[in-house]
Length: 355
Image (cartoon, rainbow, N blue to C red; front, side, top):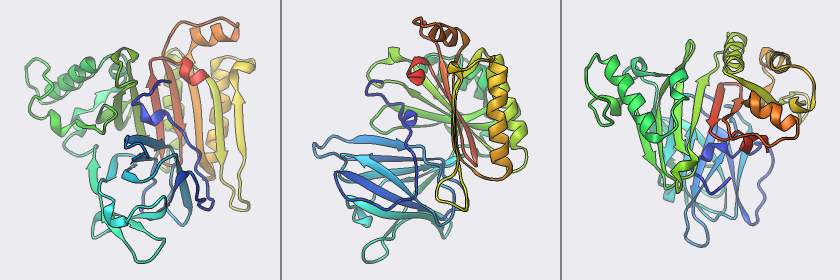
């Protein structure tokens, strides 16, 4: 992949381990919130004064666990963003933390505000963050349907689609215009130096979640756009939700390419690891989905799921690669599961995921 802005494609394993000083920045996080953190984004400086972005899909559950995010070759973090299921906490000024190459940090609530506190070294330095809530009572009626959303191929199509949805919800007869009154209550857009990112509510079947849309390459619009759709998994009803959403992908013409899952075991440091390579086995896409669901249902039933991911590709691409042929460019989907969220990332070139 090129130097792209699709920061949520980069996956790093999160594990409980001590911080090691060296050429990389090691940030050790403890989650004191009452909600699971599904993604940590760190904007940092380099020795060459070139700002860079880092993302880690770490799934931080609340509790006493210490979860490390390592940033190779970085010096100081400039901004840290915690993504939850329906909102984000943004910490944009870390100067009061006296940032160092390695830091132990905990995120918590204090007086109703998100607080990032440093727990190593002398003192108890803390900074207050900004809350960005994407799913509110005001914007829920304006949610975009996933079936239409994922057919959009350009930024302009996304803008027109969201604008049209909002206008129809408000029963306003007008041409789709991006800055029409009411749309900024539905869409949150930011540009962190890696290109513009838009957030807005989205429906998938009976569930409402958050859509994140970003150019795959900020310097080349021809690379297309990526859709990251995130939904909260209820404590009761996980099986129904996962079965429905994964079944929809099968009907959509995708099929599983690979499935991997890591579970937690309270009696030992490491849990079990599942790795199913479907393109190296027999069976149709429904057999493969059943195999995934069997493992997922068992892990969700006993609360042992740590994280899991499934790669989906178009059936034509699956058949071509399995036959040793070069497939035509077609979409791919990376589905990620944690204890609290179901996340589906649609990208225009599924070969990136297959490699």
